[in-house]
Amino acid sequence: MSSSSIQMLISMVLYISIVIFIGVYFAKRANESSENYYLGGRSLGPWVTAFSAEASDMSGYLLMGVPGLAYWTGLADAFWTAIGLAIGTYVNWLIVAKRLRKYSHVAGNSITIPDFFSNRFHEKKKLIMGISSIFILVFFTVYAASCFVTCGKLFSNMFGFDYHLMMVVGALFVVVYTFLGGFLAESASDFMQAIIMIFALIVTLVVGTLATGGIGVVLDNLKNIPGFLEFFQVAVPATNELGEQMVENGAPLFLEAGKYSILQAASMLAWGLGYFGMPQVLLRFMAIRKSDELTKSRRIATIWVVISLFAAVAIGMMGRAFAPTGLNTASSAENIFSLIASTLMHPLIAGIVMAGILAATISSSDSYLLIAASAFSKNLYQGIFKKDASDNSVMKMSRGTLIIISIIGALIALDENSVIFSIVSFAWAGFGATFGPLMLFSLFWKRTTREGAIAGMIAGGAMVFIWYFLIKPLGGVFGIYELLPSFLFSALVIVIVSLMTKEPDEEIQKEFEEAKYFEC
Image (cartoon, rainbow, N blue to C red):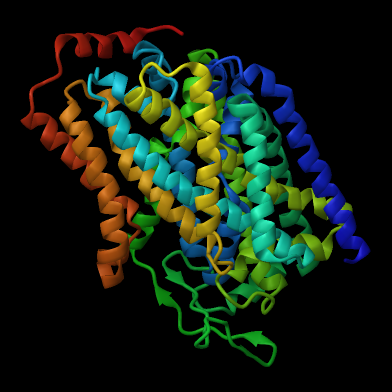
């Protein structure tokens, strides 16, 4: 290993050590109760709430997936995705955050999303809790796999280590850290990691643009690629049978620009709909100490997201001018961020910037693992199978679940050619369609029934699989992102089934009204 690689590794190890310290620091407090472990005792301040929500949401796809997408096909897909995410972030904080903070307290002091849904409809037989917990386990296992892929790619690309070894090491690190400190450790470190992520994005964008010759030179280079700078066209790399982009006279080859319809743009904007069903974000709304502080958190979160997404898209596009032939597959294109940093920066600074990718990965995977573990131990084990389980046994079950989910996620991540953006987009659609419509109707439509909630969840989750595996391959108008049709189908099913079934009893409706004006 070269001296520069050693210096980068030292910076990253230092960062990892700080994260471990945070986990150890909060371990005692986390172990006091399951509420502390899963929700931090509802004690988060506005800055930690905002930064930890967005850091846990923006996984490796922010620093690897989005830049890779922009590098490979140009502006359109990445831009419309970023716009959708920015709008979704703002609207979610605006209409869902305060209402959920109050309602989750009124509805039996719920500390997980399945808890809230079950308590909202006063379930005796915990069917909603069971179904929502199973969906969380499935989709968060996929999400965790995407984070492990990020770890493997990062260390393999940067230091020449074996991908599979580094993927496993990354998984072990996240498990140990989450095992120790729970939600408080996760939220505190996510606050730090959000700062590192945005620092890494801005520094890499500025340094890369200056090294390429400035904005004018970058744009002049990109204008020569058909469809690269268009909102309704996409660049189409000319690839061989192995999926590698062909090069001629030192320049990458592109086919004629592909068409990009308004429907395709709308389907990428639909990424914003996913926020309404994203457990790792919704839990932050529930965990803030005072609902009135959510207004400040909304402003902080929105500014962070807009800056971060703009920088991520711009890095991918600038990267095509900086290294036009350096990354010749859709999978390797996701290394453009690390390529720029390692090539242009002092090794110690590059190490800190590379820690931004690690930060994005850790801040997301710890959330995914913790929520998935709570879905099994708190909601399935204690909520359904063993209702008299002690808090201590729930905690032990949770940590055992962490390990099992991580093993399954690591098995999914064994393919080093996995495209992070594709893995994340599927899991994002799963949560958005399964929980998004139900969350909105649960908070804002008194007439929503338990039967409608169950039918809507199943319809949304199932449609994600049906659309992705059976309908989307047909292409044409069916080639849109699976979240949009699945979200709409789930919402429609909730309305129809709720209207066809008996309206909620008086006690549920009274609680619904109480949540509107509850102060907490």
